[in-house]
Image (tube, rainbow, N blue to C red; front, side, top):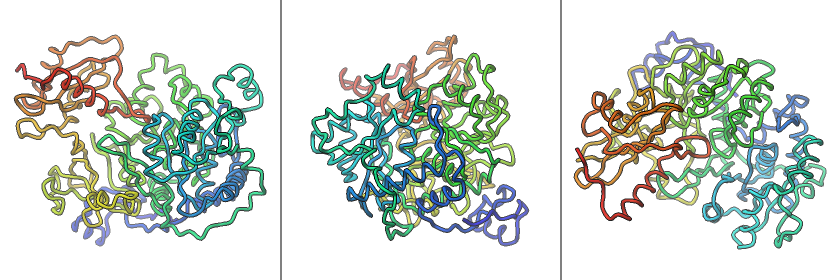
Length: 587
């Protein structure tokens, strides 16, 4: 990987010329980072092997009281790679990972890549219908899972129906320290599936059988352009699609993040509270952590109290998360009982980071919390706020090294619009996918020249800082005017009683569409719809003021904790269909 250039923010003539030619971010680029640095594509499996060689005795994973070193994880992945090759895994073969955050995920992720295959990430919370769709679409024939009932029973059903050909089943108890392992078997046997009694046991390979070899696997003749991961989009704006992420895409994105956040202390640890099957954690927790020789603290499920205890005990230095997690930590009534001062660098993604959350969390932990931006299609990190200064409020930051951003006309994406004007954010860079799996038309539609169309509306200021306004498909068309839900959400967050808010468009008999706000109040706080509407009257135009405000005790979230509009939109539209008509404005 190329070293970080020693150039500061003092701009050379070449940099000034490039800024004038369409790279305005060079004017404000962080000290010591060269936006024009070059990156060498690499195989992720080679990156992993280099880490094992350099950091063999150091802890690689921590899971529920048990540590495994880089040497141990490396040896397990070699044996798993040979076992997978014996099952027919080679270049182009898709292997699904249906796993929570465990060492098993790390071992088999790199084992699949070493064997030459392609990883397909599956969400353990998916329904059978969602799993079957993704299995068929990706052409996944082999799935790796645990013998926990919650995961195995779904895989068993897929094997029985013929949707899936074969499964590798790993032991959860074997991941635990001996005492905990015995305790699990004696006291919590109901959590473990009876794999040996399964009707499809002829389609099951136990992990211990797969690993019964010398680890001398056959190294495939891959190039960095080979597809390493099929990362399925969330499906919030339509049918999920598999983003083809190559070894080059993913290895370079790790190098880009490393350039932004240089090597930390020798005892660097990253806590993985986000699921590794999600692209954000896959890159910023697992791949980045491995590339830096960090200890990866694996949390199978985010529970606030357990996470706070882990941070206090294990002293991680880095924590990627989403705004709702940082907000929840700040609001814990006994937060002063936990020591979070080991945290040095936290990166927030997935949704807008409110400035009060950033400042409050930084004051609490004495660390840096920066907002970044990315997508499944971009491996994922595209922009990040600088670490060497205060961010611009509401900005997602500057493009990472080697990354270009272009703001394009919403009416014609071929047209680049002036800085400061709102348009579609488009991205070019070595981390951008070559396309969607088996989706030629979708791929062509999402590119304009070499730039990927994100579907996000935003603008860029004179120094190259980027600001997101909203998703194009979330925009509300009210009487012909574009209404951005995020603007309404930001205004409601200014009210002291509001903890969380999501705004969606609902059918409106007069305006066509109208905004509706779903609000969760802070614990102990009170507010009425009339009070919030009066509060918004001075902040929003009449067309932006919500037609309805509905209070909820809980708002739906995605697996990584991002507020989700999909369920609320579907629920409201279902109600409207049941009653036969759209909303009639009362104002």
